[in-house]
Image (cartoon, rainbow, N blue to C red; front, top):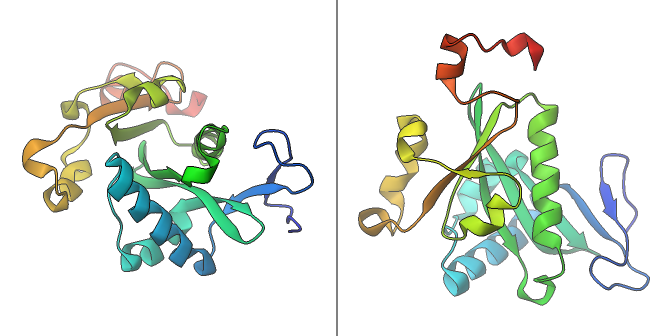
Length: 191
């Protein structure tokens, strides 16, 4: 597969490939059926992410990136913006055949860099595997640190009454710790 100038090409070696290349790029409409299958399969098998409907994926396709081996989506992740200073990392999933080869880390690196490029100040995720995100300097937070709007999806979650997820936050801008930072003199123009 030939990459475009917006594709991030991860060459052989990371995944033990010999001649092929795996490309990490923005998701496209044609990727939705494969993203749907991958995310929902991992939600069912691993129980560590939420299932997503086909309509939800089409609606939020611009939030997603994919790792592609030829035309096969082998991994995905999304960056969902909630407010001027807050975005959520969602739907991180890697095909079972490609797990343990660093693709989750590659996807996270691209998502974090994308957040930086657009000027995002803070990321969060809700997860049952906090240790993975702590490798990227996410810190355990409290649900109270996140605005109520971020919890709007919780009512649809099958785990709503018995939530086992941990809130993790990554302050991308040095010294930024949420809206209270601005009240204490944090200068957004220095970011």
